[in-house]
Amino acid sequence: MTSITIVDDNPLSLSLAKRTLERAGFESVRTYSNPNQALRELRETPTSIVLVDYVMSEMDGLAFIEALRREMVTQNIPAALMSDSAEVELVRSKAFSVGAVDVLRKPLNIQEAGTKLLNLARIKTEEASSDFDTNQPAEGALPLYPLENSSVKTPQSAKSQELQIAIFLQRIASVRDERIGQHTSRMAQYAGVIAESYGLDIHQKTQIVAAAPLHDIGMVSVPDSILLRSKNLQPDEWELMKLHTIVGHQLLKNESLPLMNLAAEIALSHHERWDGLGYPKQLKGEQIPIAARIVAVADVFDCMSCTGQEGQAQSMKRARELIISNSELHFDPEVVAAFIKALDQIQSIKTQFDRNEIFLPTGTDVPQMLQLNL
Image 1 (cartoon, rainbow, N blue to C red):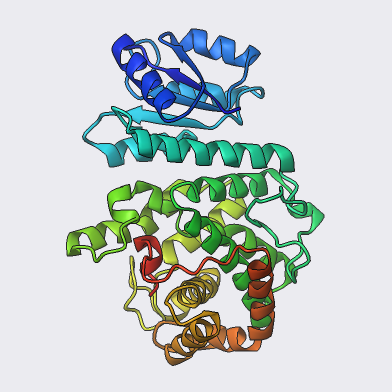
Image 2 (cartoon, rainbow, N blue to C red):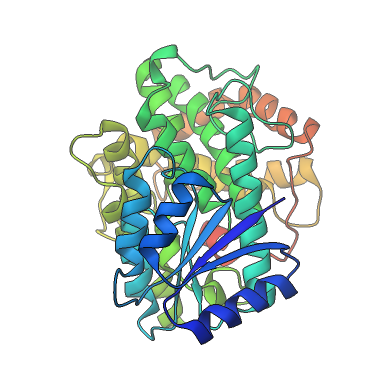
């Protein structure tokens, strides 16, 4: 059973949140108005998910989450922040910097809170059953890094704390829309075989596969009303979407963690173009990091091959033709050549996803996060 702990020093707000979650179908909801008491009891009786208010007098929500992360017994409990602040994007940025997995608006909405918390509970269950063993994914879990029996194998040395962080962040990114988690899992595998075909060594390839799923992590700063909308956006909304490259770089950059630095580099540059007409810095040609050039091709191919109503074969053909026609425009021509050389392997990986029923044709109802590449 999913157990939820709510921490809020406002008794009325605490009672309302508890009632909302019970109405959403959660039977085990604990409440605390004293954050220090909550921390003490969570050490003794863990919970599935913690919801904590952003503004509290004794200890604010950010400090509470930092305290959770410091202790071994509580550090893996997913914690989401609750806030009624008008500056929601600033709150999101602060929340994710301390390890929060989401930010929910107060007062809680039954549908939004219910869906997001159920997804978080599912991720927590999968994580516990797999114990971060990437070669043995939990039953029903998305294949993360790498696909079992695929051409991309995980060296033993790669099973590090960095890799665990990367997997955890990928799971967070998929909470808002499961299609996005499926997309990042597929495109990372494609990026791996393209990297190998391009001539990168096994270490470089392995690092790209691990880092690639985080390319759009900066989307955590984009409101759901924009991110998950399938209709066209206004110009100012598109500009906000484009900022995900900069936000992702800021979230991931860490001088002491090479894998996170690579992920930050990819996040910043995967929408740059070979002809210099991309964003955010209008880099051109080999100014764009090679990992970002590889991910750009894998990213577009997956989005194009899993959209539309014409069926998988036609979608793949359309995606392949688009990438080839944009060689030397959008894409590095040598990376496009490597992509063409690796097409049989890419098809094999896609077939494996399809066999595991992970392929999800999105039709015309495509989230804006994926429409960026169409």
